[in-house]
Length: 195
Image: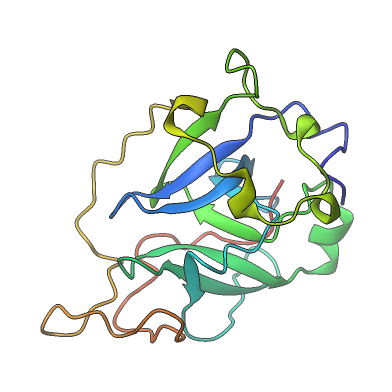
């Protein structure tokens, strides 16, 4: 699906950061909701954030739909921050969706709304280049002046999603697939495709 779709072109472009370590995860985020449960808010992106996250364990599905999902964790701190829709189910594909397959849990990220090149207006999805016209996400990285904070409070940053061994060491090195240790999904049980 094109980012110029009329249903989504007026949505704000957000920068998404890890709530645990404040690491930049993506600069091309969009506020979204699950198709299977529209009360669940997330952030999504259309560009694979493969330099900032890595996969955790294997694919799974939920009771709400048959999409094949795989958790993703921040490369800097190891916390699970969302999931990738590896294979969307037919009902989700046929529903109105934004075409994004990389999802960030709203309780695991903080966001900033990006400003346009004038610095006066919010950057909207309809103003972004199509994916094939964009070299990569890093070329679009905004400066701090181009972003404004969105007040998203996250009271519980206790580390229940943190992926460490018994001695507090991260079980991975950058570039290697993360190993699932303990309960890496935390309290985020309702997942699936997105709107």
